[in-house]
Image (cartoon, rainbow, N blue to C red; front, side):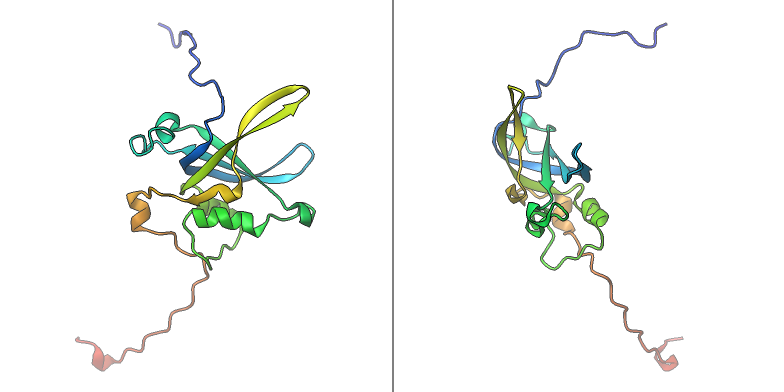
Amino acid sequence: MAFFTVGKVEKKNNYEPIPAGYYEMNIKSVSQDATKSGTEYLNIVLRVRDDLDQAMPETNGKYHNRLVFANVWKDKAQDYKVYKNSDLNFITVAAGYEEGTVFSSFEQWCDSLTGKNVRVKVGISEDTYQGKTTKRNQVWPSDFEPTQFPTQAQMQSQPQPFAQSQPQAQAQVNDNDLPF
């Protein structure tokens, strides 16, 4: 009795970039990474939503579940020490957070975006290295927009601000006010 038998391998994906256009995406993860030379950037993994095949047959319908990566680089004008507030703001507002929402840490911001649906304009860029040209998908922070197809769960519970809570005033209760 065999545990496993190797079968014929059929390549299902040629790893070509998805065509340029607007896609409804789910933010799968947000994390910080670095190049070999040490330049830090945000790596945002986006998955083409699979629940919109009929609503968007030419984009989501054909490419659902494909992954697209958006890289957000630290600001060159700040010697690559911080991310541009405008870059982070485009992404955060697209995820449904309102002006004035406070995040207490970078990790909280990353975690809060994971699982959110957004609309993203996907482009294609060409890179040539050592004479070889490759095409890849390109997503800029300004290409993030609020989803046009919120899920039922999104409509019922909008993201809540992470502002620090204020202590509630203690209610004064008199023994005469109690029914027992």
